[in-house]
Amino acid sequence: MSAEQVMQPMLRIEGLRKNYGAVAALQGVDIEVQRGEVMGLIGPNGSGKSTLFDCCTGLQKADAGRVLLKGVDITGWSMNRIAREGKFLRSFQKTVVFPTLDSEENLVLAGQMSRFPGVLSTFWVGPSAQRRIKALRERAQELIELSGLARVAHLPAGNMSGGQQKLLQFASMLMPEPELILLDEPLAGINPVLIEKVIQAIEHANRKLGVTFVVIEHNTDVLMNLSHRVVVLHQGAKLADDTPEAVVRNPEVVDAYLGG
Amino acid sequence: MSATTLDTPRLPAERVATVNWSACALGLAALLAAPLVLGDYYLHAMVLAMIFLLPALGLNLILGYTGMLSLAQGVFFGVGAYASALMSIHFGTPFIVNFLVAGLFAGLIALPLGIPALRLRDTSFVMCTLGMVVIAQVISKNWVDLTRGDMGLSGVARPRLGFGDMAFTVVKAPEYFYLVLAVAALAVLGFVALIRSPAGRCMVAIRDNETLAESLGVPTWTYKLIVFMLSAVFAGLGGSLYAHFSTVVSPLVFQSYYSNTILIIVLGGGVGKIPGAVIGSFVFVAVSEALRITPELRMVMYGCVLLGLVFLFPQGLAPIFQRAAEWIARLGQGQGAGKGANDVR
Image (cartoon, rainbow over all chains, first blue to last red; front, side, top):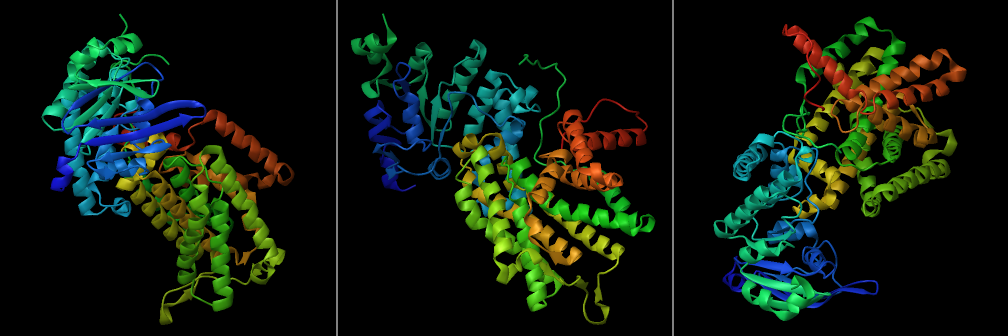
């Protein structure tokens, strides 16, 4: 990474617009995410949070605007290129894992593309490929232990509980040693014990591994504690961008989202 | 869906490729001994089964492991057959050259067909591959200068193997049987190597959840294109064997009958399972041949057998064979028969 890239914000979103027919999902949103921070992203349903994630990570094409990752314009890049070259990953609102594979295979798969130089090299089954896969398996086992999934690691991921799948999904995103992760409702539908585990995992990755996070979450109490900064979206536009303490006192935010 | 607990007995997850090598060795030994006990008619049927095994392996790769239903395997089978026949008739090139070029040519033809087709998903992709079958039929019938139309190409040379004084032409049924067995065994090994490679894991990822795979950095479209081409190579090699076995190639090779047979072999054998195509090819060619005792009812009976298999074994026949092999192995170890398989591949 060049010195110039280090000086750049981790992610800069400039004037992002996205329309679904007559509905304006994003109306020229500008956001900067600094290196090493945990940024919360909140707003009512339909405010454009997930669409913002989709447009940043290449799942959907924005109608206008730019997305810069460490100063590099990644607008129009494919989703896999953003993940592979940008070390920029995302989770989905609905938890997704590879259901027929066990935890280790899920994790090896998640880390595989970062260890092999190109698509054709993955068709090779020689000693160098075996060494790479062995290293991935060792890393996968570490993450399985860290995530507390050892007891269920042999099961097809599709047979694991929703909370366990959330943990596996999170562990999968750590496999390629990412620099930026967008989490879409990581705490939705899981019990308080697992909520605590997920929070610990995010904090660990942020503090120990230096991963930058942007987190969409409706559990605002948890999010305010977790985030260094919070951005509020409302009807596809940015309503606030401040510290958690300032955001909860902002009357416009209270009126539009947090309520009395 | 009922809630599952840690105590609920379940199958362990599928690993990317587990091979029961003892069962493979047993099967291979049985096949090697077949010409000693079977007559030419049965050997011919088994040769056909092993020829169809090649395109079936290709289909298993693209359907079973990558999750895309392609009806175009028959097209690439035909392309391989025509390529081999044309080279043999017009240039007199040796079998091994024709064979390799046929596979390569089928793979190359798949490139321009796959680039637009793989932009489509699900039923649109299936329809697109069906369109390829129709186009191939029309071309083979109407490009008379090249294909001789409905008359077809006859006089394809029998394979000639070896060098100098050791060279011999493969004519007798047992000779052809061993040649095709060697090719089929190599093809199965190649297939297993593909599935066990890191790329095999990417294929399963695309099958399970393409968007998730993409979000983790897997260039899904590139993989799908390569798999489409590889499946065509398998089919093209099968087509070449067929051309040199039957010595005649006509537009009939592009009939949907061939694509359907390949599909039945994979679905009936066990889609997404390593032994699926192998078991399917032998069972369905055997069923088809056995029903020749009632020529007028043959296809009706064949349909009834298919319906019965779908209802009785929705996962295909591979898991049944797998369980039987494990049961025999346990008997051999003196532990008696226990519970079912712990590996669904």
